[in-house]
Every structure is written in structure tokens, then in C-alpha cells.
Length: 486
Image 1 (cartoon, rainbow, N blue to C red):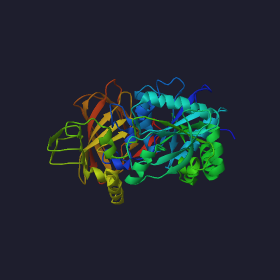
Image 2: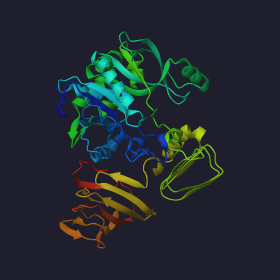
Image 3: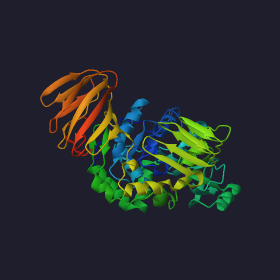
Image 4: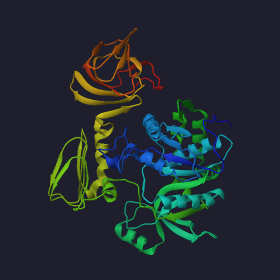
């Protein structure tokens, strides 16, 4: 079987990070949305979770360029975030549908083997916080020794509290000849508080971090042994996949055939080659608003505050303001999160149930489950300022050197006014230079395009009018980003 290689050459003694950047982060709604999930957000500092996952590997001298596995809908966002930190991935694999971690790791390993080499893969979710980077790097170095010898390594987090929100791994006997590795005795689900306290007191359990290390050939061999259907589907999805700009698109139909399964259930709970490297990390997977409260910097009343927030008699709470003043009185153990189009108020003890609200929003077909008011595109972004049945007003930002697709609409006309920067507008066969405070009208059915030829962002106000204003009223004739009609 021959796969088309899309990699740069990588030294065989190097570790290839596989960053799993899929998922929707529904428990962090309303900040995390389907098209702008938590791994793409700046939740702890000026970098996004994806960026921090890559950056914390920089100082390890045995780590090569990362391989990213992400949702097809997030491809341009992931590529742009890596560009912002001057990281060029060896590949970005696009999942057409979510199938959990076992298929995602399988396609990454198959691609790594496609170029007649067998690197050690370091599998990392893109939404973790790790404060102790030195311990993390040391654990990677220890893990590589066992991965080089054919072991399937998982990293256990030494617990510092009786956490009920994580799964646990029970240590087996210490690996012979190693002072830092244990065999795997059992994987256990999230416990109740009393059981978690027993786990902590025993010293025999670690939190299941979801981070792994193994040779590409070793994990494929175990996947073929335990879940051959996954391997078959993933092989076919790569064979029928295509390169698209800087991405590799897995074949949708083939990948959808794969059973949906985690690597824990599919392999790690059954393999005889499992090894656990425990380490103290200052680790959190930021799975809920309560997790963000735990990891955040707190004021004198134990509150974590982000944005324009005014408090009186508030304790042990998390308050986040994106666009306006949030004022709170007399709250304790609460979460309040404000965005431009939604406000969440919840008890800290109930924030894991936020996902049920997202399910209800999706059932009602509400856009708040999918998008923010600001929607990101490969060329920039737009924000809906106002809308009604027959009109819609947007603020559009186009990145320097970027351009929208050549397109037309069947149901709406558009009027553009440049607020800052310079635009080149294509209107049928005519090309027009538009400067600040100048405007142009695009009638219904006219072919058009907007481009930013300058070195600063182009900002416009767009007023749409017509019988239908949905984003699917776009017929594309040409697009530098390879997008189909949507």
C-alpha cells in the first residue's frame, strides 16, 4: 500500500507530537462554541490552548514539528494559530466527522508510517494546562525509553486532591529496572468523593491524563489486534484522502465507517505492553468552568474575575465579562459568564451540566450553540451588529493580503462602506479601488469579490437586504482557500 507523503524529513531519533485538537468543549459554553471550541480560545493567558500545547514542547530538544488532527470546520483557525507562533506543522489531518481518540491516533500513526519510518509519537490533547513544564519534559524523556522498546506509555498525573471529575489509573508492579515506570493494573471511571479520597490516600492511583507515547508501528499493531475495523476504516480514509492546501483531507465516507472509540477502551485497557509514567504536573484538562476557577488567579474573596466586573459581597465565584459591565451582589460559589449574545449563570457545583443547555439550544436550532456573534473565516472575520427579517448589518475585517471568494447571491443585495484600510472590489467585470469613507452597492445576482491589498486590516460595514439572508446563499466561482459552495 502506498500513501502520498506530505511530511518534511524527520530525524528517526526525534519525537513527533500528535496534537488532538478536535472536540467542541460544550461544558465551557457560552465561551466555547461548536465552530469556536475551547482549544482555540485564550483561557489562561495570551495564547490559545492549542498554541500553549505546542509551545510547552519548545524547550525539549528531542521533539520535532507537530502533526495536528483537527475537525475540518476548524482547519483555517488551527493553521492561523500555528502561524501566529511561527510553528509549521508537518501535517494537519482533517477529520470529516468525530470518531473519538482511537481513530484519530490511528490515522496519525498510519500517516507517520507512510514514509517508511517509525517515529515515536507523543499524543497530547490540545486543551490541557500543565504548570510544571520541567517535570513534563522529564516524563517525556523517561517515556521515550519505554516507547523505543515497544511499550505503550501513558502519563499518569499524581493527584493532589480527591477529584471526582477525572478517571483514574491504578498502578501495577514497578517496571523491572526502572525507577519511574509502572505497569498498568486497572483503568477506573470517575469515582464518587468517598472513593476518590480512598484513591488519594492509597497512593496507588493516578489521574488519567489522556496523554500517550508509543512508536507508530506499536500502536497500529495493537489496534489491529483489538479493533481491526478501526484500522481498516482509517487505512481506506487515507488511501482515498486528498491533499488540500496545507491540509490532508481524510475520505469522509471511509472515516465515518470507523467505530467511535477512545484509545483507552480500544487498546490501553487490554494491552500487555502498557506502561505508566507518573509525574506531578500542575495539570488540569479545563473540562468545566469550575476547573477554570480552580486554576485562575483569585482575589481576596477567592473570586476569579475576567473583564469588566463589579462585585459586592461575592465569594468563591468565577465571573467573566466579554463585552459589557457585569455587576454581582451576594453570590457565593457561582459562575457568571457574559458574551455578546449569551449569559450563563450557574452554581459551581452544577457547571458540568452546562452541556445539557447546549443540547437544548441545538434541538431548538439556535445559532448560540454553533457560533459567536463574531464568526471567523480564513480571510478574517465578521460580526453581526444588527439583523431583522429583511436586513442584516455586519462589521467585516479582512486580513492584509487576504481576499474573499468570487461569489454571488440569489436572495440578497449588499452595500459596503470602508471604515479603515483600502479595498479592491470586483463587481462583474469591473475592478474598483475603495478607500476610507467610500462605499459601493452590489445588486442581487451580481458577481463580486472583496480583497485587502494593504498591510493593515481592512474594516467595512456591510448592510444586506433581501428576502433571505442565510450564509448558505453563496455561490462560489473561485476561492483561494479551496472552499466549496456553502
